[in-house]
Image (cartoon, rainbow, N blue to C red; front, top):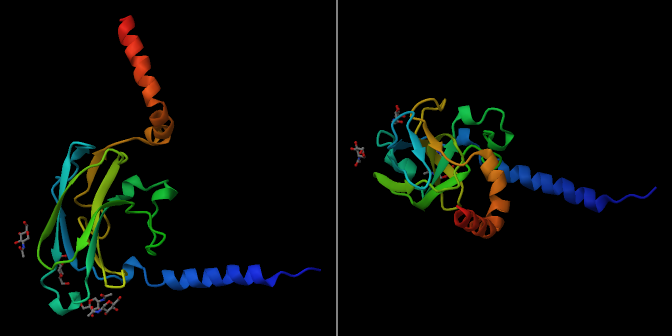
Amino acid sequence: MEVHPPPLLLLLSCFAIASYAQHEHLLSSLNRSLIVSTTPTPGQVLKIGVDQVTVTWSYNQTLPTAADSNYTRVQVKLCYAPVSQSGRDDRKTDDNLLNDKTCPFDIMDGPYQRSNSSFIWTIPRDIPTATYFIRVYVTDPDDHEVAYGQSTDPLKTTNLFQIEGVTNDQVLAAWPTFKMSLGYSYAWLGVLFLM
Ligand SMILES: *[C@@H]1O[C@H](CO)[C@@H](O)[C@H](O)[C@H]1NC(C)=O
Ligand SMILES: *[C@@H]1O[C@H](CO)[C@@H](O)[C@H](O)[C@H]1NC(C)=O
Ligand SMILES: *[C@@H]1O[C@H](CO)[C@@H](O)[C@H](O)[C@H]1NC(C)=O
Ligand SMILES: *[C@@H]1O[C@H](CO)[C@@H](O)[C@H](O)[C@H]1NC(C)=O
């Protein structure tokens, strides 16, 4: 009988490295020390390519200020609310941030500062129709998440907003449509001429 230990060992050590690396990235282990607010009124429906969201964040000044001494950068992200996650494994929340699919859209990243920071974001045209909130992660000099804040409560029920964006079908159709769009333009010209 043939035995091939090296590939198996390699595979096992990959798992070991992966689980070691993933250990430090649990959302539940981060301090929720940022206060985050957004401009949409609760339940407001925003349009892609047109509407803007202003995100404002700051360190919660009632916490000890020394606790933010290793805060280095912030990452602002658009996140699916629970109502838009149900039945969707590709949007699933996982406490392990390497597996978490709650916040797939990057809004901006930049240096951390303790006082109010804000960013005006024009909603890009490729955002799917869904209900959202915004989360801001803080990373340390090693690029590890150490803190966060979000524009909704821990159960993600308040201050949610809707984006009327692309539907699933449009996302699936986008690639062939893009390749064909030149052809389609000519076809439309032809139709216009016929009319
Ligand atoms: C700020 O931190 C204090 C102390 O932990 C907490 O009670 C308060 O709810 C926080 N404020 C916000 C807006 O998160
Ligand atoms: C700096 O970040 C690490 C996590 O990467 C944390 O364990 C440590 O307590 C932080 N130090 C301060 C002063 O907050
Ligand atoms: C941050 O902005 C909020 C809302 O605009 C305001 O109420 C608060 O006083 C500001 N805080 C600081 C430290 O500038
Ligand atoms: C969270 O904040 C406390 C102080 O409020 C600090 O001692 C601790 O190191 C912080 N943890 C991280 C991961 O930054």
